[in-house]
Length: 126
Image (cartoon, rainbow, N blue to C red):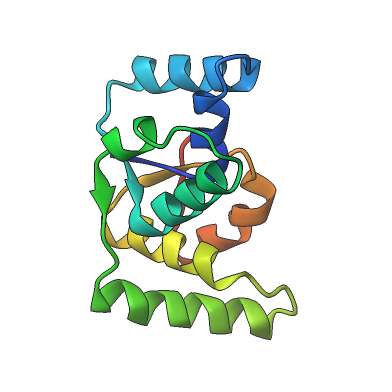
């Protein structure tokens, strides 16, 4: 399974985005199931509503909820990153935890930001 990060969905929704076209092509070639997390859905809907854009398309993606198990892991991720002196925002820690606990790969355009989490079990879609 591939979890799409918010930045990837934004590019895909922007019909004029070459990055979005490339992302769609990579997803189709993988032939894997695709989903987003409830955290990503919040970020996407917030942005669409803020800029008065239609929200229907974002609601079509399968969405994984955050469980107690995900909350426990995300808190550990957040603390570990703080200890390294490179804090991560809570939403990203939660997205990473949901991805890890579902045995999925995270598709993000910000791999530099998420790469340090590989040591904690995060797999990135490449």
